[in-house]
Structure formats: structure tokens, C-alpha cells
Image (cartoon, rainbow, N blue to C red):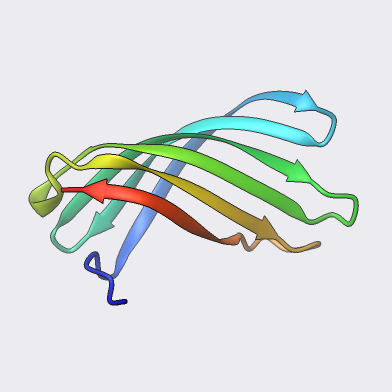
Length: 101
């Protein structure tokens, strides 16, 4: 499937909101996605769970809140599931959801 969004950049700002369990950190944040033909904005919440081997499991639930250019009026939602291997700073994963612009 070809992406209709094209190349771009993502800027996240997040705040740790708590530690509901010893190895789980909760967070919330905002994101701006920059593309050649406009931007998309979203808000999200999530958790980062530290596994016994040092890897991490990240789950994010987000909601699109608008945009500029061809993405003006963007709406929708997504869920991201990802992992960070032990001794790494690289987060890899997949998102599923819907977006309308």
C-alpha cells in the first residue's frame, strides 16, 4: 500500500503522569506531524512497561485534533503498539486506526 502522507517529521512532547505499577510508567502528550503539504496534530496517552530483560513495551492511544494545509480539519484516532529491545533507544512498532482530512 502506498502512503498518501509522504516523507515528514514527527515532534512529540510528553509528560510522565504516574507509575501505576512498579515497572509501568503512564504518560500523556501532544504530537505534530510535519509533511510537505501541511501538518497534523494529535493528543495521546499511553504506558511504557519495563520487562524483566530490560526491553520495553509501549502502548499509545491517540486522537487527531486538526491540521494545516491539505490536512486542515484532520480527525480520527489510532493505537500504537511498539517495543524497545534491551539496551536500545530505538522504538519500533505499528499503528492502527482511522484518519480523515
